[in-house]
Image 1 (tube, rainbow, N blue to C red):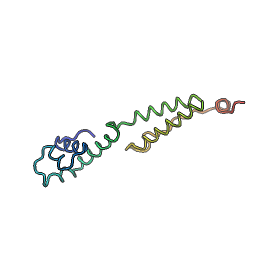
Image 2: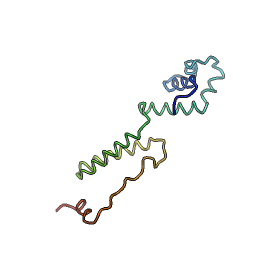
Image 3: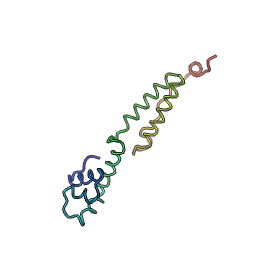
Image 4: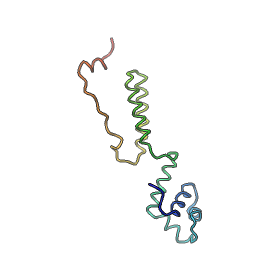
Length: 135
């Protein structure tokens, strides 16, 4: 969500997220009538939504865009798994676990980052060569 069109509403939301009380945030935003106005501003749907967005961004260190991070973790997990070693598989498992944790924090549709990657069809010989125990 971009900044609010009303500069005072944006200033109010920014002050609230920075830790100001409702009354102090209202004053910092440039309002004078403290009695009736605080409740009007504090409950406006766009202000409530902006507050939630700013609070979420603050929890994530200022960046709410986890998509690229998740994509990078998934790519690294695929590379680690392709090594075919125990260390590579262990690394892939850890990377996938971290990606899954981040996915749970997203406020998106469940399948937005959960598309299965295409699985190549292997012949019996290719499968045995890749996965059969070494004797």
